[in-house]
Length: 449
RNA sequence: GGGUAGGUGGCAGAGUGGUGAUGCGCGGGACUGCAGAUCCCGUCUACUGGGGUUCAAAUCCCCACCUACCCUCCA
Image 1 (cartoon, rainbow, N blue to C red):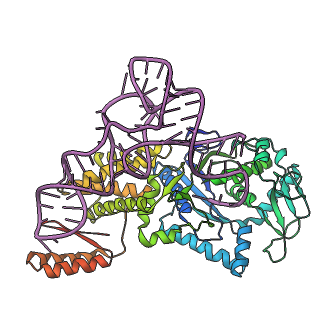
Image 2: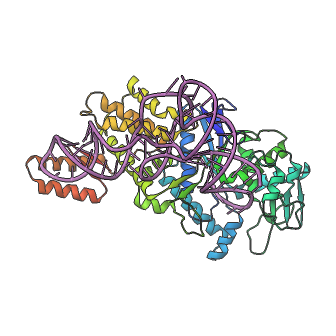
Image 3: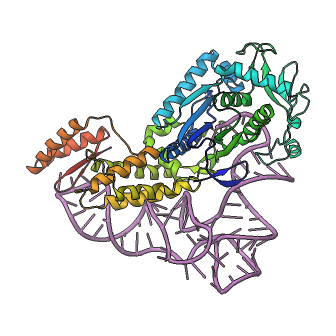
């Protein structure tokens, strides 16, 4: 399998440091607002990546951090006139709920930044010992120019960064590029104790403290959206490599491109933020996943009403086929294994999910066109859909007991047989209102939803 | 100014040297108690512009133009 690595700007053959055991870290959200579609794109992508690696036989430990202390959270606290804990509880709760609804369930552990204060302090201490950090009267800063190699991930020279950047006016810093490791407390802010007094950690240090705790100074894969390349991930490299003296920190840096909405970047000032919750009011979670899989993970992509509608149509086709083989026994044979492999194969080429979707749609078309699903056909389809679902999570399932539905369908078919179409249509309409669709052919009916 | 990714048919979106991806849309037909779903046929001389390499270029090279994103918090 090949995957694109941002650090080397190239496709690299994927190989684990410890054989089949893969340590993977993805930057989670700052919990200061409701999750939006951009989060969905990134987290669905990494969910599928982890699941695909597992499908290929890797044992993936998928770690995600939750930034629960940050300037924006403090701003939000003041705006809403709430306690820090209340903001964190509310928005991390919303985040987890959204993950669940979107069927993002491959993450092994969520690490909250504030649960790692001792580890963070330990890292800052070692940076100071190594001469890479210094204390001022408002915090502790990282000496960027002291770390050769700063800029290697974002492919910028330190001087270019200075000339292009708006200079951060903070006279206490030795250099405008220096970034904060520890912020000393101001009135009304949440704080923790440290050798530098009461305060809170900077944004970049939490991730290296967490990953070092779980994985050590060198691990397999680090993911996140492309806007995190600089300065966040750049600074992670500086911190961890500055502490350990070992490089690289990470073998594969994987970044997802941004998602625009109706061709415009999502931003709060334009009020075009689309929350995940809003989309899920109108479309299936599976449709959102299909949408994400239909676009390039690395590119900037566009979300539109039309694109999600297209995805919803595909989601419904999958569901339709799934319900045609509901209750059949899976059959794993040469044919069903081959069909599965054909659909998943493009993922070996830098997670080409769009091509995989094309092949899935081709499979759907062929199978929906089958006149009869008797014999082994139905069971083979069931096997393929099950395998595909384990990686993509796009087969719609239900919580309505099949027995109950089967009973209803039996009654309705009896009504149809005796020509009582009024009853048959009324049952169909009522089921439809419950979100359960019914499909008739001359001799048999299918339910799907 | 520096960095990165791009410019493909009505729309979305693949394809990276040689048989018109695919989906949506649109038109027609089959099937059906009806609806839906499904199937078949049709719709298109698509590749930003200009040079170059080649028997052959959307695909490689050069130049130009344009777009998006990053360089400040951001998934």
